[in-house]
Image 1 (cartoon, rainbow, N blue to C red):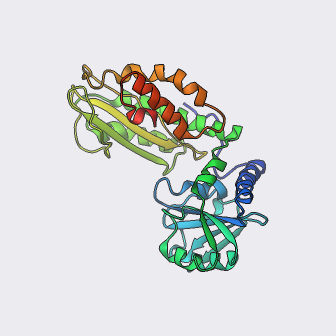
Image 2: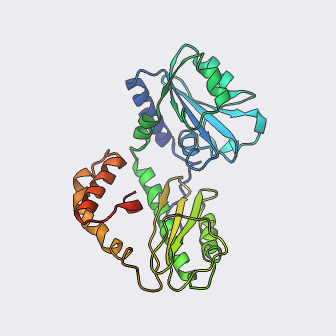
Image 3: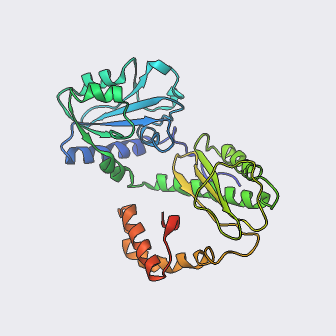
Length: 309
């Protein structure tokens, strides 16, 4: 199935870039900040904020984006690893390669109030030690996420494309699935398809399985274990398409009868939807939807588990 668009995180129109900066700057100004520092590293889930503001994908090491409220942005790379990704993909004109990014950032924001996305989990200790004495650092993860959760139609198209790729990946998994095959044999064609569709390194594919029509709670890297005819299998196919938006579409596969424990999960989710409807508003936080879904689960005497995640 061909891609529906040629959209890419590296080829966004200028009005989309400006929209993103405007939303972040509005939030920063509301919170009395002079600038925002966005931290990113190669750990899956910790790199996307840098890509969101710069079009740059971290291949290894780390990078920072400095977005002042009233000035142009800068992307800062450590020279300890001159190549941390394809630098030419960023749309930010000012690119700094420095031995100690914290020292460069400290000089740029000295005496100011700065919101930091990734202060607790991403920023390197060396850079934090330098910055904490130069300016007021404000943890700013939630406000940044609230700014970027407001999606444009272009971003929604990217999400739909990721879903299309992911859904087709499941059908490929199902096509290759059969008892006696190893998990890695079945998953390999999915990964090949994802790369062909432009996902690049934005894939995180695992398998959850278990005996006698039930599945154990741990997702695992696909390995040499062979599927049994009595297994319950749930492929965890998490990918981001060319636009950079992560999605997961999962369905259970059960060659034989489901266990008494797993059977109720096939009928609990649809009845929850009416309970969730009042919470599905344009800027509703994910946690509110999860709470609504969990309430519906308690009504039906089932555990929400990861199905409401």
